[in-house]
Structure formats: C-alpha cells, structure tokens
Length: 229
Image (cartoon, rainbow, N blue to C red):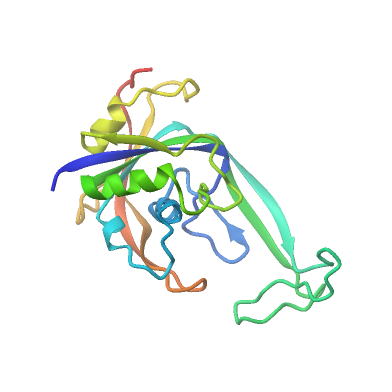
C-alpha cells in the first residue's frame, strides 16, 4: 500500500475537542482529538454512528498548532422556563425520561478554543485518503469543529501530499496569521511506544447516543524547526 498524507485546515471562531468531559463540565483539549476528527470525517462521508470505523482507525494523526487561540467558557442551562410557548418543554434525562420543568434544570459549563487554527495530517493508505478527499469536497452533512455549534471558517480540505505526516506538516507554508516563534507539533507515536502522553481518543464503537468506547494512543508534543511562510 502506498503511503500519503491528507492535510486538513481546522480553523474557526470557536472549536471544542473534549475527551475528559464529565456531566455538566464539557471540556476541550488544546488541539483536535482523533475522535473529533473522525466525527468530522463521518459527517463528510455520511456515515452513521453504528457503522464500523476500522478504516479510519488505520490512519495516524499529527497536528501542527498554527494558532493556539485562547480558552473561553460558556455557562448554559436547559430545562427551565418555556421554549416558544411549549408547555411540555424539558431537558432529556439519561434514563430516557424528561426532567420536571423548572425543578430539574440542567446546568452546564462548556469550554472552547477561540480563534484557533490547526493543520491536521492524516497519514495512511492513499486510496482511503482519496475517498476522504472526495467526501470533504462535497460533504454529506455539515462539518463542525468538535461541536455542531462550531462551524469552520475556512474550507477544511487542504489536499493530499506525497509524503509522511510529519514531513508534510513541516513543508506546508504557515498561514498569514500564526503564533510567533516555532510552532508546536503534536505527533502520534507508534503503537507500543508509551514515552508520550496517553490520549483516550480512538473511537472503537459509537453504538448509540449514550455509549462510547475508546482506546488510547500515545502522543508527544515538541517545537518544530522554523516553517516557511
């Protein structure tokens, strides 16, 4: 199988890549997660949650942080008051029921990255990357950056490069607006290499809206040599 790299530009006013969210505190990582990027690709492909992800799991993912952005948070409530005059409006509960309107208000704090920009490299078999490239040119469902409320500000697709992931990220010119100094690179290590930080963000199964099964990978962050403008 020939190896190649598909480059994606993930940039927008807000994005959120949670992987340790619990209950009402919806966190975000400092760069895109593999599960979040797979979700974006599944939207492009029109792939349902119940469909297998074996082909996507074969891809290795690296991220170049062109603009880190800044962390912001939003306080939200659900289930109180009325929604467009509907008397039966109430927040859904995990058991499938509905919260008592006005008595079981759900409180949430959602965290986002504001004005961030990432260059993501997906390294793998060229035939799969060509399929993803075609889907990103004409997505089946709208694309988002971690959450539906976070649309991309620029086209996500950059293109396929005939190089490994790290080489492709190093060779790709920096955008006009980027962080000063050497850019940060988050690279995925080989399976079995545990020298980096464990990231439990490889989706193994998304059978329904309640169940998520993930495996871990190991990543390492480093500063890159100067990238051409």
